[in-house]
Length: 218
Image (cartoon, rainbow, N blue to C red; front, top):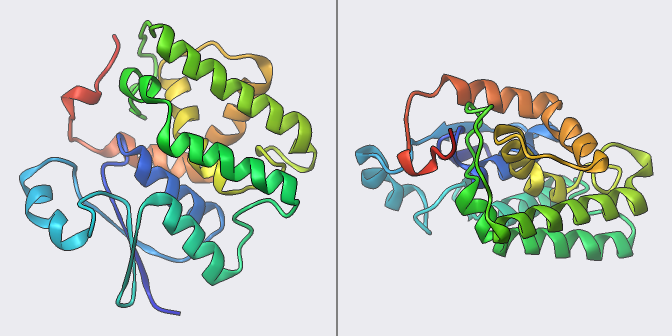
């Protein structure tokens, strides 16, 4: 199999990068990583050569480039024979739906609670749109855990692409001290207590770059 390189943005801020990285790391997929600080002169100079879409993450495998976090997760699952989706077709349908919902939705949450791993203890006052997003996410987590979570701590029991996609949300909830119902709090603990997330967060805390628009709260 060709050598893999995963191009990432800042670990402190890049939720899209976390998704792909988290999936590969939990599954112990070998890869090298290359981080480019977002929106710097170096970023602007290099990104068009590194990423077809001008965004991160991008996985390079030999002469093949795979961009977009979902595409990366599915590509690696297929190539390596990993359980990217639940084995039960009903659970699989729901998992794909909630990943698609995360991929394209929750705009208010993204805007008002940007991912910022090293800023734990920040406080924001979410507006009603963001509160609706928070409630919806907790409903997703509760329903998945109640119906399919008996075999493990993840949304569908065993780890899937869905968990990689909701990991940045768990990080946001911790950063801003969002009050959660018990099922959601337990799921956040599982995500944030994982070895993979701990490694990511430790690296994020070492970064020096500041992206002002992602420094929300007080």
